[in-house]
Image (cartoon, rainbow, N blue to C red; front, side, top):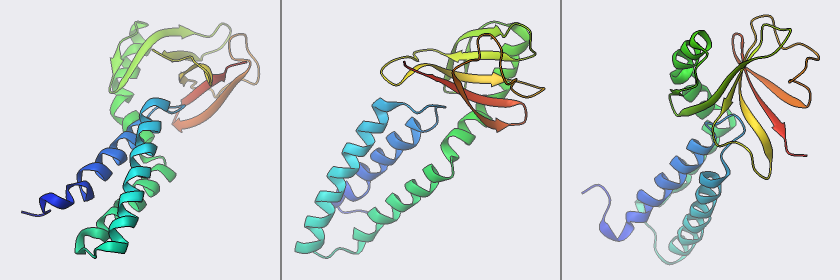
Amino acid sequence: MIVKASAWWLAVLPAGASVALLYSLAFPAGNSGPFLVGLLLWGLVGLVWLVRLVWRRDRWLWATPALGLLTALLAWFDVPLNVAFSVAQGGLEKQLVSGEPARAGIYEIAEVKKVEGTDVTRLRLAGTGGPYYEETGFLYAPSGVPESADGLNGSVYRPLKGAWYWYDIATR
């Protein structure tokens, strides 16, 4: 057995916390539910880890901070968002052509809408809105995002890949 039963938390709980955090960061503006669960779990892991460090030395004890560091590095370099977007990109491009919202990878698109007077298409994520963001999603802008256009004012944009951007509109 790789990990003894009394030290299950060294593998399962940190892995679950990492998965929750990385999943939440795969969305353009983040996903606060899994993010908060991941932070809570990592807080619990840190507390148990410190107690165990003081009372009992384990060779597996250093796997926990190593996993924490790996999670932090993946989050810092936007790996979850880049991987999730790369997986979904083909589906998003099909939605551009059809104009019909659908699922693409982990993303559920609620609306595909051309922005008047531009070559920009907005793909709004389903379930967005709440205390932080009124709306979030992806933009396809082959000529770049215009400085001002009806329907784009008040949005924050970030380039993803090629003509793709993510956007969010903060709650006012």
